[in-house]
Image (cartoon, rainbow, N blue to C red; front, side):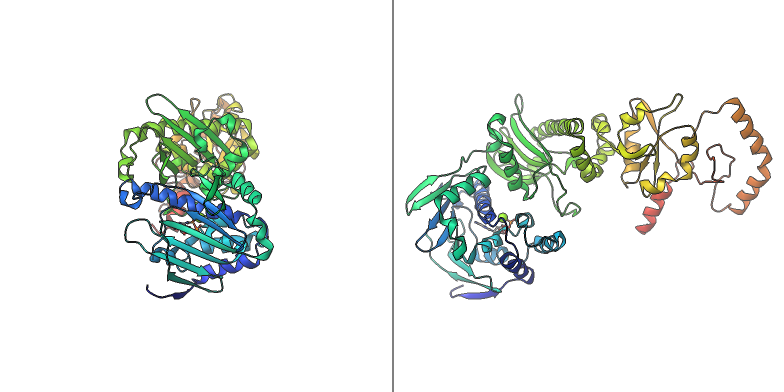
Length: 549
Ligand code: ADP
Ligand code: MG
């Protein structure tokens, strides 16, 4: 571009802006966290790309954020020496192409009902930049992409449906966000206010954040060292929670965390969290999930899936390795033996954490189970190596009562002579409670696990047994229940007496059933369908039919 151009905001972005300006009124101070977080991301990107493109950093190695409250002009400026933006990136990132999150954000706000108040969720949806308009009526972004030959640009908007872009001058790479504060928000120009917000929200940021009092005079106001490298005893819960929010953009604190350092053949630090709620796009299969990978404190990449097995993909956090090469690529990660060793340790630490949570805080564990149990169960079928560690973490509905039970609860209640752990699989626990398949088991006082999650049957087959007790489907024909002599005699007599009937039934239903038998499994229902050996469970059949197979 030579001159100045004016472009409209994409419709959803315009809506987000309107909402930010007119309806969100609490926690306005979070704008600073969002902008500092963007600055930190921009520095991460530069540092990473510079590993292979050293011309990006050139002879200016500074990686920092600075905040300059210009009281005379009434503007607050947040600068970084990061990757910067080209014109195309400016247009795409700050205005026209809505992040997929914009719509989700709008929906969430509408749904929460308290629309007006809660602004905390803004960062989660990839619309954090717009939080600048919580406190400013006009925002300017001056940016120059890193690398030789890039030109400086000025983006500007008062959020009235359009923004402008024009060439400008800026000697250094990076980005500068200029907030023209509204009169009632001029308090964000006070030093103490900025210091307080930075230490509260951004202390974990790995780069120095400097407060410029006068032009040229600056003081670092954060600690700028990686939280996970500090000693546990020096870290407060609030600091752990803030780092979690920074990593995930979740607005709620996590359910639990584990912070560890591993020494020996592989040296690395890890800080992992169990979220309290699943992210809004948990079931978006395209969305990669994983943890953030650092090598010797240098950010390498987001969403690294290789450090955790897929059935722990709900975990969030950071792994910082001392042994991986700095220039490690995604491809390299896939068959790195170092990463393999890390993955093993991380899996173990995560299982330890879940186990501890189940033991120490069963209520919190219930929440985790409700949100992520479905994912965890996949491990039974996928990873026989960890079956024994996962099994005690399982929770199921049961014929025993309302609450979820563990397998060891079940085993503790097993009756004399009971062959194994019975389970029944169907659409919902409630509908299973009245299933005819339960009758004969219930008559003997046997408990039955009621499974209704589509992965359950697959998972149960993967598990096979628990504490030496086999898992047995209550739907199979080979349900061998112990009978005393009296019962055996009654059954044989009935079979002979009813033979004409069963033969007749088989004839009528010949294209639908394989066999009609007199059974001892029912007490009040006249009949039920059971699966022959190797047959597809009815529920699965229905599922497959629904999917058109
Ligand atoms: P998110 O950070 O979740 O992607 P934001 O609304 O905060 O969403 O920012 C949108 C995008 O704008 C970022 O992804 C980034 O590409 C770009 N951006 C914002 N601030 C900066 C900055 N200081 N330097 C470089 N790019 C930036
Ligand atoms: Mg952001």
